[in-house]
Length: 82
Image (cartoon, rainbow, N blue to C red; front, side, top):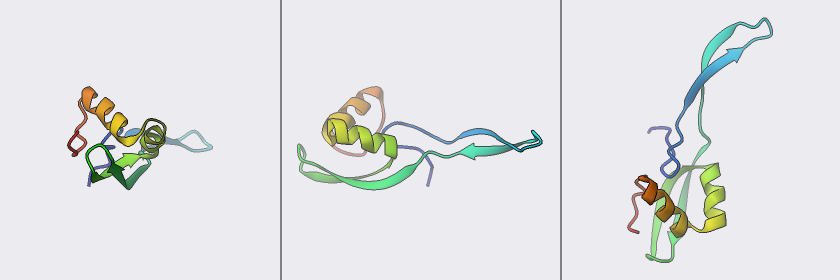
């Protein structure tokens, strides 16, 4: 399963581990993905999404339907009927 948020599009980025002696080795920074079910009252269905915790906070602010519509306008596929 890919490590990409379905609503924000966040993906792993690369960087360096830097030791005390300043040696650098490659590493990956992974997004904090969670699998979460949401009930969309406007459509009356449950939607399971693999999203970041940042997206969960935005959904708590705006509501799941409004946030999914906003992201669908940006071109993200949510897998739900809006």
